Length: 316
Length: 316
Image 1 (cartoon, chains in turn purple, green):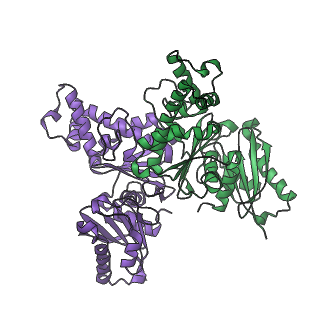
Image 2: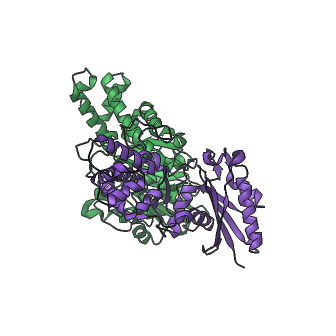
Image 3: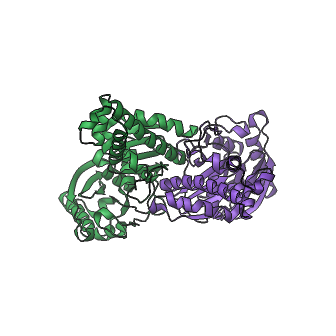
């Protein structure tokens, strides 16, 4: 009898779901809206209903479901407790794992942070395929991270492991990060961070640049880098300085084989790595220097792969 | 029938050995000299002979030995390979685990880096008793580290996990660290680092201080702090600034419950923590801030406990 696994990735606007075989093949994927009204109280029941509907559609019996993996946008401890709730969903502190287990009539659930789960997915089937020691950094609106050590997610005491975007990297910063501190990596290496760096550089003098005529975005900056704009290159160097230095600190702690770069900013692709890698090599402890920089490959599917992989113990 | 475990900790001058019960009780401990002559080729055979002699003395049959854990002063990967050799012992690259297994007639061996093993021992039976997410930092001649996440040692790709002494922490440093870079945490937070900080501070002006009349050492600095010497307090603040900032970066990566401070500098005891903790709290990502700072408790026995604990899977 065939066995199945569900992988679920809860985002701020949609929940992504995937049905996988026991062998880890994605058979079907779909989305449902994330209903954040009323403190997001419908979200987990909607997930359970969607899974039950898919089981009915495919004639899958409960005993044939090995388990449901689920990633959520907030710190999630080993037991499945959202230790700080999930601000984007309206959630307070509760146990996501046991809640979904009850709503599905006792199917085994594993819950983890969404960035950690996405890293696990990339380590299993994506850019870090088969790599048991990997750091994934996501450069989007913020800087997120997920770390795999010895084939396991670095969850930490209350599920905040891998939050590398808030490593302090600049003593001279005066503007506040969303976390309340000043000088976090996220303030320089996120999409909004790149725009901040660009504004600061452009305000410094009158050196001509194509960036003076556009609405600034990380994409515009890296497009200008590609076109050889000297000011844009200075901005990319600054971006690379911060990210390379931050990732070197992370590598000294966990000694990865691969550092995987994902998120919106990573659409600049291979262009980014030459700005990051030389700085990384300058600052990393020499025995930790053999790191391959790669780009994430699974895009929006990383979360469903990773959460299903957790159930399968895919990286054990 | 009672079962036994051996724990071994190879140091530069002596090898410490311990005989433990299956329940993790230390029954006997002893030392043998570390013979570093001839590229240290006698060290592993000496360990094997010492274990066999102890088995004979106690009438322990081979089948009653669950295994031998061994810590060595160099990067050691999951398989037991000393990936960069061990400079202090004269060792090149080789597999410590399989070598000792062969020399003991097939007793199961687990090998790991000595600092990582000591951290494991402290997490099992020492200052971090029962704590599955812990960072241990050793402030001695250098700054070493060992990290436990989810009850497992963070070994990393080639066994260099936990090398937090070489996190880059100061852009303005001009002197070189032993690792070849400038501005590593070790240059400020080790015993020699504290002396460097002291020399720099004393050279800055003529402010009176008891430290102007002594041969500088980390102990003299912290003794002067205890006596209320204003210059010594400035030096301790600088030490705390670097160590607090570095440990905050580590905590953002692995989200520990406990940060354990050991090594020679930690003999200053509770005096140190008030200089580290406020800086740590200033820089750590708020969800990772609930960390207890404690002092290591097992001293020189941490390594034999940790290596025996590895065999017992004591923190699983």
